[in-house]
Length: 96
Picture 1 (tube, one colour):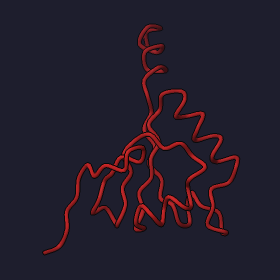
Picture 2 (picture 1 turned 120 degrees about the horizontal axis):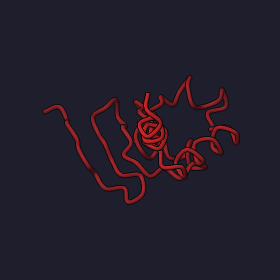
Picture 3 (picture 1 turned 90 degrees about the horizontal axis):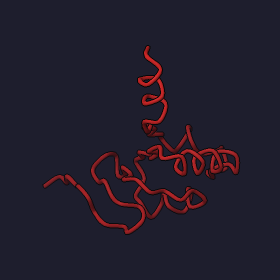
Picture 4 (picture 1 turned 60 degrees about the vertical axis):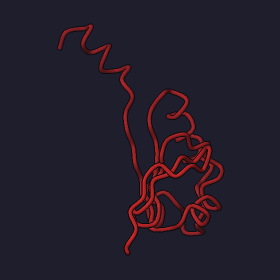
């Protein structure tokens, strides 16, 4: 790979989406301090870090509040995507 192409690839944001329960959350249902620090550093470096969960935003927020989420999150088993900063609904699909 050409040096300029390698440098450009190194500066591109990376995208990470994690599940919560059994993945990002510890057995006590909280995000560890180490995980919160790593996620915050990734966000500060310009990467996109988010999560998807079956939980509602209210339920999830209580568990992951130590992370300054900036990118859309997926809740309610994928039925809702929202902005964690403003709480604005970005997309939803509900059963009739």
